Length: 150
Image (cartoon, rainbow, N blue to C red; front, side):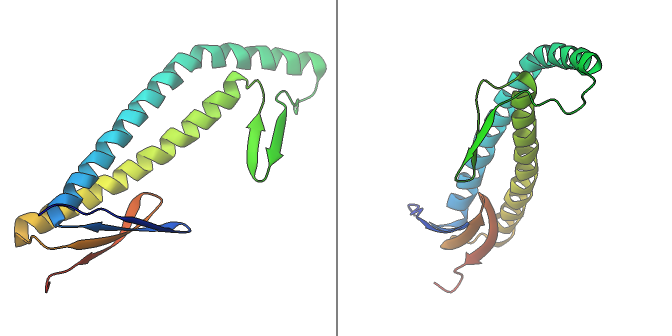
């Protein structure tokens, strides 16, 4: 049975249709693999950034001692319609964005892996080959409707 994946966006929620549980499982595998590759790339970028960050923080501490001001504003930032634009980011700005993002992605990976294991268990236990409707929020399945009687 060929998969018909369809996204219907509505705010934060999306709906996806799959021809079978196996198609949903394949989709989850692809999502996890893609996210793992992205996390690995970001972690490499963080590792490359850490020496620059250490030097920057050391210099910043010296400047704070000389100036006597703990709240030095170093990065010009502009916010336009909720989007923060940082011009000429410092290593700490880059590090904070990368670290916050990779931590969030790792949390998402944990949830996706748990969902994948649940789907794997359902497939192995039931041998169902039926359509599936999945509601997703932020890329994470939150509801799965299995069309058993269809």
